Image (cartoon, rainbow, N blue to C red; front, side, top):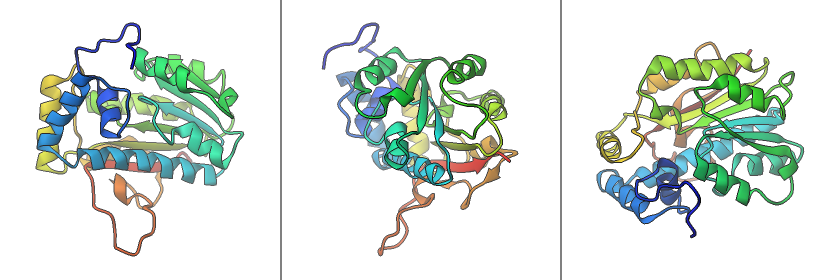
Length: 261
């Protein structure tokens, strides 16, 4: 894998480590070392990362089934299999998607990999989620804010420990959306001691620390919205696929989907 311009491969990067846990190839030795260091404390991290991705697939599928044809994916991370536009456009080819990230590696990879049917309906915005005005101005060039939009924010808000700052950022996006829009959000939860230890390992070694929240704090992102059943739950338990062998194991990622009335 060739190095990309302006990419520091000497320090572990959250998007690349996450890519490693998901079985991707867009990572470097330093990322794999960091990923393995975390896995020593919390072997279930791979399952949690996959549950987060599977929640995205189920949430976008649900939103498409509710008639949502526009998506704003904030903090998209490195492209993998079943990205938002792939899931949405498999159900509704006319779906329009705006991805938002401010990481040069994410944007470079995303643009290089964005090929195939439906790409004319997809845009990438280079912006920070804590600059919602900039993000929304760019999104309005591609999305119709007079019609409902599905806002997805996964694995992103843990990068700020300040609850009020995090809540305010999400609220700014939600406030700009028209009624009938949805918020789908998932983030790491402090619901097991191994996960807490894993977060400590991460924050001691990574360039960008990660802050776990309680399920109640994650529920705070949905204040004022109408939560879809079953509410805020472990990502593996949100509309899980039906099986004959019981419910899936819970993971330390909590999520929810809610509608703006």
